[in-house]
Length: 384
Image (cartoon, rainbow, N blue to C red; front, side, top):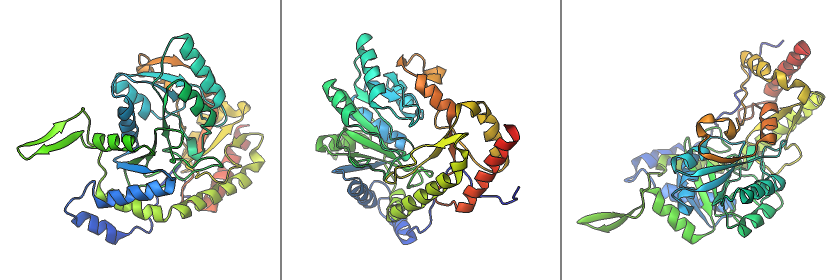
């Protein structure tokens, strides 16, 4: 076995080529938060996604929270995918709302038309009226919302797209963030995402009314009044502002976004080429779409080898190769059991058991993938 140690964290930020002059200026401004650089960054994101309006905020979780508050601030009933990070579920719980867990496609990890129609039927049987639906564009992929959005319109369900994995992704019909079929699309600019502002997030929308509501909610919902009576509280909210230094970093990242996308696509292509000999053991998803901005490279272990996943992860960790599972189904977080009022999880559990995320980031080289390939090959030769 080679002694080469790769750059093989599952995800890693890339802050190369930062405009340090812009960053220096951001620290010398009279206002170092929510000022002109934030406004410029919002315009860049809006232009890039094809949306009319954008609001920058301090992280992706805040983006989801503000969007939900803009629609229903108390006791919302919300449909979310069972394969999901805990952000949305935690928000719903803290708002005193209720969670409806929709099953996913066992290959893509996303809700599809069939699973959504099933959960709507079950809602009607149980006489549950959902307020909001939060679909995820998972791993960089793009969810086709066409028919689903028509169902939501008929059922008077508002859509908030979770685009945190898929900034820069598109298909023939939509670009993630254009918000043509939703009230809002939310993004995260966490260090491992497609671009980063260190910490940060954004929301896009095409509704001026929605945008004004977001602006109001972003800073405690305080409205200026008079010098002797400085502000009026319209509705309880929190501080979700982005710092000017974060926006300055984001502007530099936007200048490199096409390069980042190309590098990730080339790495994915090499993974596919290298891993074709593993067809009996595993499969790589999303491999035919060249327009998506790959955030995660995930595989499915074939049924025969699922029992080896934990052992494989431990082995790869010993070789300095980082892996992750995206995600544990929300239905399996027992602390949320009283918040969850409807669950569908058959496919979600299958996805969870077979899914494994391998390293993918712009700091990787082909030799890193060669190293990962050799170690996975060695593992399955030894244990099967």
